Image (tube, rainbow over all chains, first blue to last red; front, side):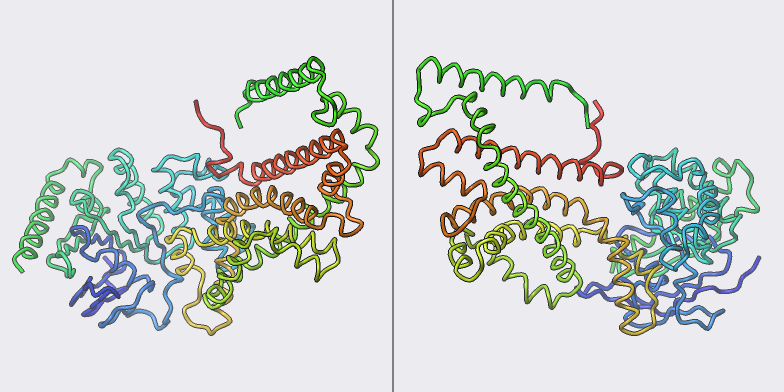
Length: 258
Length: 271
């Protein structure tokens, strides 16, 4: 297992303009090849961590560094998936997937192969010409993921991407996401408030305390290479769920005492 | 669009019946044509006076379309400028509002003093049509999905790079994101402006009145009124109504063509 650190957050503190402290003394290392879940109650600053890593916002104090690289701008290596699909309704699926490459000056004909590959990764080869309104919620989210994958990111950031989907769709997307990670060999940072989702997906689970957010526990998951097809019904999975659930309950109790 | 034949047949039937009732009433009660001309007489007048009326129609049509075109150019250009720069927005927008809320008929006499008559009429029509395009386009340009803008920041803009790079990324976001997002609102504004530019043209022609060689349809109406040529007045009125309807249908068709793939308003309802 490759354990080189990809991104390192060191004593990060983030205070919003309205005076709310979202994160305080936040330390986290994202290692290459990780499937790292940030698990925590809503409003604990999980999304802020993603935005900090993506460079969409700056920490009030502390540092976000990429130890293995000397470039200052890492946005080229990042794919971002929001909670909503946020597709452009006026463009068809292929054009939506093309967007990040288009913004980098890649022409449509040059991007053609990449678009097709990305759509194939999420199983939407046959819907390239469809418009977002013609797709179901799950399919729209797949397009959104394909769009993030089109830039072949080293680090894929996902902000509760499946929260609005039904359980059947969600299970399917969970499996497909793990499959895509295996194929692309990328690192994923995944924000969720679902204990079961984090236990199923992650090679590492970081549990956050309520605001101001801080890592209160780290649980090692079962990496996708060492699990069988029946992982969702296995004892190891049940045990992970129990651990994560316990850590979350403890963090909430601690938050209330303060 | 749903192709429900009733949608076409029903209003047509009502229209035909109303015309028939009008004709029957005028004939039965023997109403003199200077009070209320029968539809048949209006049709006959339209035919007889066609050279005169068609020339007036052309004048008013030209004014209306020119005013609409200028309103689109001016309104969109200003909306874009306002959306790209706070400073421009703060300094100019209040004046656009003042222009809009001042009743145009009150401005028309002044314009007629300062400008040649045809230009003054055009300016009036433009003033009325300009604002809905400006305000609607601005609304559209501002109502872009926040997350999509974030996406643009993530993928589009270089973190370093000076002023030029920032302007470049802003223009990119404008072209790929704000422009298509603003299209539905712009088109709604255009449909309103289409009707208003006709109204503006008519109002200005009336204000101009007999001040010169004005020969638009509204001028014909005033003239016919003075001469008690009521059939011709009605004929001119019918032409104005037809023009308004044609303009509205044309702009609605344009909206449908441009939005048919993706916007809710242009999609057929499932029943």
